[in-house]
Image 1 (cartoon, one colour):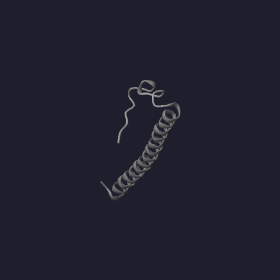
Image 2 (cartoon, rainbow, N blue to C red):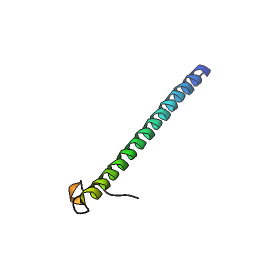
Image 3 (tube, one colour):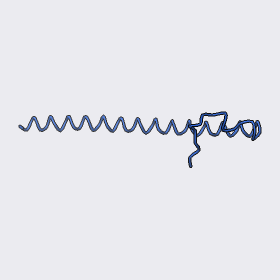
Length: 70
C-alpha cells in the first residue's frame, strides 16, 4: 500500500466513524423521546385511574405486554 492509499483508507474510516457517531446520537435522541412518551403514558393512565376511580381503569384495559418497570 502506498501513502495515498493509506491516507484514503484513514479518510474512509474517519467518514464511517463520523457516520456511526451521528447515528448513535440520533439513536440516543430517539430513545430519550421514547422514554418521555412512555412516562407520559403511565402518567396519563394514573391520572385516569385517579379521576375515574381505582376500579374503572385496570390492567384488563391495556395491552398485556405493558409492564411497569422500575
